Amino acid sequence: MVLEILGALIALIGSLFLLLASIGIIRMPDTYNRMQAGTKASTLGSLLFFLGIGLGHSGLWGKLLVLSLFVLITNPLSSHVLARALHFIGKSPLLVGYDSRDDLADDMNQMEEL
Amino acid sequence: MKSIFYRLTVWILLLVVWLLLISSIQLQEVIAGVVISLLIVLMPLPNLSVFRYIRYTPKRILYSIIFLGVFLWEVFKSNIDVALRVIKPIIPIRPGIVKVKTHLTSPFGRLALANAITLTPGTITVDIIDEYLYIHWISVEAEDVDQATEKIVSNFEKYLEVIFG
Image 1 (cartoon, chains in turn purple, yellow):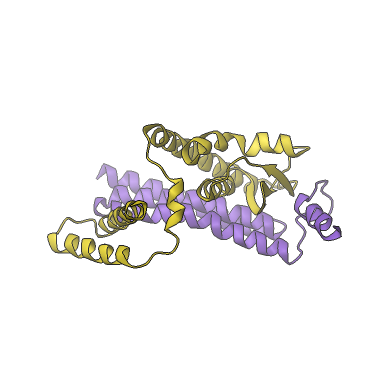
Image 2 (cartoon, rainbow over the protein chains, first blue to last red):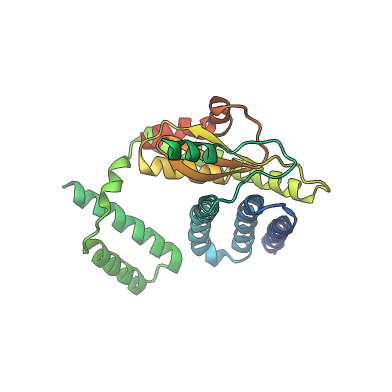
């Protein structure tokens, strides 16, 4: 009983992180930064959610372990591929009004000149 | 001989995943898993050679466990970091792409490094060209390649260098 309540609380915190991730996706100014919110806050959200479910239903531990492993491996991979494709089609990560730099675009231009 | 060892590794891996998924020790399900994973392993597997980078020595296993702890702690920190950025009235960002250098040569090591970087505070790996990783950083805090390498990569690299050699 105590474990079930604890599990429910942890799952609640996990879903809070998922909520923050979705708020981040709306609030961030460009696609790269939306991806930052979508990848990170949702990873911990899902992991906490799995932990909470695992505490409530002890028969599901194995499945949840495999699931969290897959989330940890595939979540960063997919966001990496999206970011790479986005840069490849020429979207600059620099925003108007922020002082920063883009090493990848600089190096690409250098390679084309050679 | 080596190929047999790699196939054995794949077999054990498949079997462990199967046992975790069914999460019950009923004899017929276990036997089905053993037989089917054995059949899969006996098929021609073209990319077995990637396993040559994985060796099982006590030091490597110890470092893997330490790395897992460091990694999970960084994941936790990065989630808090992004969550706090999201709810601030003016989002504190200074986005840009920085270049960092890595010494790792094995594919597994680089995969682990790129994934670890993506899951840690404010950074996404965008591309790998030769020995440089290009990283989208949500608020750039480094002036040149060395400084960025020190801040992003060195924390993980010292473990991954031992684990994957």
